[in-house]
Picture 1 (cartoon, rainbow, N blue to C red):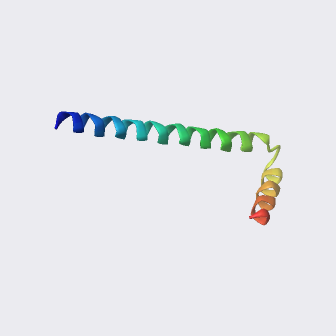
Picture 2: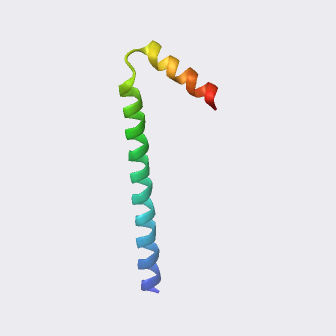
Length: 54
C-alpha cells in the first residue's frame, strides 16, 4: 500500500512541476511579446492584428 502511495505522490509532484514549468514558459512568452511593443498604440495595433487573424 505504501508503494502505491509513493507512486501516486511522485506522479502528482511531477504533474505539478510540469504545470509550473509550462506556466513559466507562457509567462516568458507574454513578457517577450509585451517587451517588443514600443508604446500602448503599438500594443493595441498588435492586439487588433492578432484578433483579426483568429
